[in-house]
Length: 198
Image (cartoon, rainbow, N blue to C red; front, side):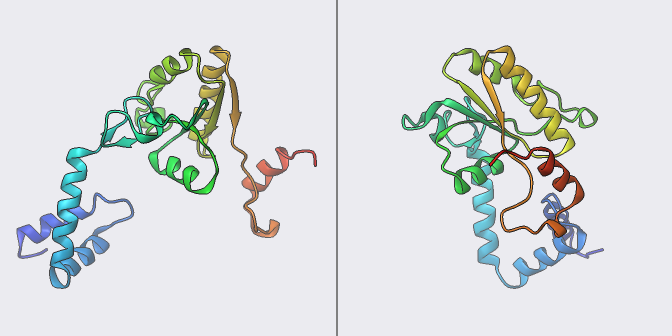
């Protein structure tokens, strides 16, 4: 235990970050105090400002400093295509890796009854209202290929079907450049089952 209550508090606070345990938090705390106090002040200021000023878009629920984010406000994006993702990080990955130019809806999670996350927590009532507006013609489901992600995808497909909107699911399987002998059994089975005609 540290002789400094402030140091102990800093170490404990750093543990809220994903993947940061006691030792890593201690290493981070000692580093900023020993070698980079200016960086620590910059981090503190940026973190404080972000926590106070970044909220969620009222239309798609992604992170935004404005009531309506740039994706939703842009007139150049295709309003007929709506891609549903679990998190803002997933949205960023699609933006950086694809040429997708449609709209988004961010669930901010996935169905997980054991964690108390149901349709209400995912904003599915807001998504249903958006689908009812009549602009969306295709709902692209881009949830992760986990048990919870698949359950969420199934629920989203039902929601789209009920609104008379075509639902599609992003493909899963063997990664580009991957070798079959190194692919896990579940991924390979999923890819084999979802094969397409050439």
